[in-house]
Image (tube, rainbow, N blue to C red; front, top):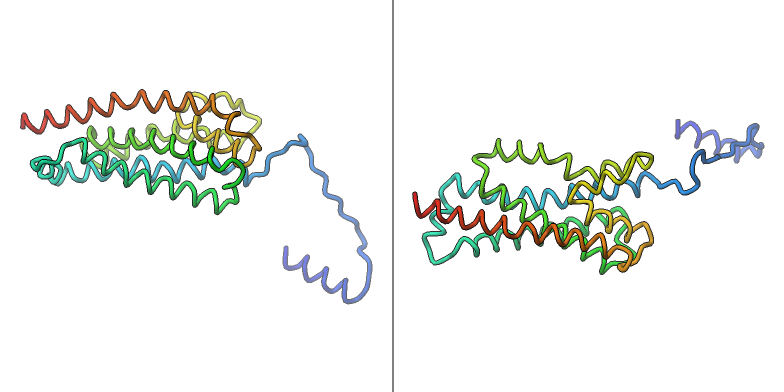
Length: 229
């Protein structure tokens, strides 16, 4: 259809004839309609960050547990905390890189760049902790996939609802990922400033801090299980 229209237009220009029909494009609906490309940004970012920050450390820890290499490493002077920190740092760097690349590709890495980086760092810290906890507790890869699929709808909920602006957007606030995805969206395409999104980032920071005791308890329990075994 596009080729036919283009060829027809070229022939008309060469022949010097006028169009028989004038086409006017009229936008129906709200004047503040958000382009689909902009509405896709939260969903693209959350998938990029989830793969790097949650799945990578979870799968890495689980793989070492199943192969017994984690126990071998812990038999050395290295502590469980140092092992988890190394996994977390690798996942964090990868997550930040993927998040930035995703925004750059979609021409959304603009505006309040510092605020965007802070929101990405917050989301990375949140999901890395969840990934490490999963890696320490799940039994095998099938169980890991099950947990990620079960919680996946809650993780990607803000991105999915952003595709349908007519739906109640407050539902997104039930998902922890909302508190870094919404600031990224507001800062990159919504014209917001860092001061505007600080309250939302503050809630996300509280959620991230609340996960720290859970991760610490999981690490201590893992070490106790190893010593008891």
